[in-house]
Length: 316
Image (tube, rainbow, N blue to C red; front, side, top):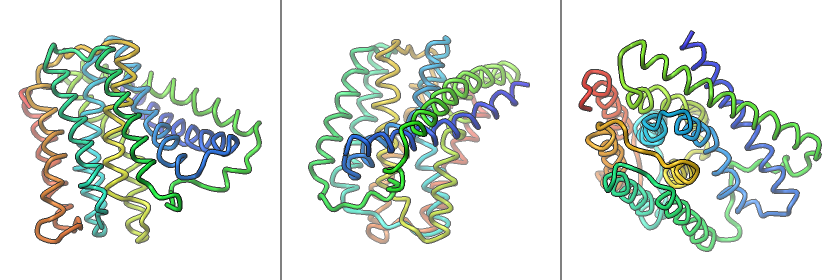
């Protein structure tokens, strides 16, 4: 029964996330917000909503380990699983903005998160506010640096002519699905953790993290198979930044998140830092600005080792 709650939760999160993105973009067009800004802000926030609701629900229901490791695990999965498998389907070209802006900002947020947690084993409202403020500054800088004619592929222009009634219905479906999806997923995950005798941190960094990355993985693989440029390293890096700054930032502003599982600080977060750090030399060696199939295989293999250690040793 616990597995059924988890599956139903995942389904509702996918449905809720999709409807929230559609309604948010349509609403943004109503306010005459440019396509570029919609793509960089509205879509990014909306696609982070499932992770945000899961972490918030976990924190409020007394499972802070799930709240933290949902983000840590999702960031690892985005690079090891999503990027790795996508590169195995077809090589990915890397834009120069990756090492000039996106990667340094991602590493900065990751390291700051580590020090905030390490300092007092707690992510406080004040620290969450710093992370979220940093995100706003990053978006401001990103928008200023982006040329006006930049194409934002993930924004569907057909949403500009959607009726107000349909937007309201989409918002209602999205919000309801995300609420119940996050509640059922956290409940089912906690039950599974008890049943198989592992910590909530293990479930958060594995089952929940992979589940919230599945929609992005599916979209990325399909895009790569069609040889479309709908997926880029920049998109995944941006997702990792949003996970830390908006998901954990906003969640801790609502309720401080304590570190209750020691492996979060002794191992899990170092895996997140490692997967993030290895991307920089990877895009230069041996072929510049490209993530080849071999590099993709390396990422997936490393992710497999991480998952093996998560389930076979409580120390990892």
